[in-house]
Image (cartoon, rainbow, N blue to C red):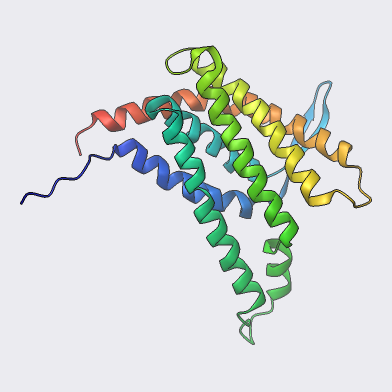
Length: 219
């Protein structure tokens, strides 16, 4: 009896691998606050560096929605929880359980940079899942979806999903503490909107074209 397996598009395979890696990388990169410089009317902007990886998650999920439909993109977002949760567990074990070597003196710095409280981990999972799902939904529905106004759909979906991501993460992480949440949100949202405007429009075109090229090229 001949075994038959359903073809799995090369672009979807490659994009899925990249997506999973970036899910983990976004959390690691987020420990650094990056300066975006001084902008006219906006002033000095700063943002957590994880946004650079996170915007690629937005772009990849949008490209998958364009190439394979909304449901497949939503599957990609849901599967993204797997590397996120595994990375959180492994980091916690390495930091809290595995003892450092006697000659290694950087345990405190390692723990300070990479450890997160349960509340922030929960906030990250909620904001990731909600904002990415919103991005896929908006991208797939604005202007009738696939094949129309690609750049505009990707840009608007990114702006709104990044705003929601910031509001959810900061609220869940810090509500009840004596912090100026509105001020923190304002700076982060403005910075993320600037980056979304710069990165998303050109890169969504690149990834959609790359996906089509990968699926045309013989294996």
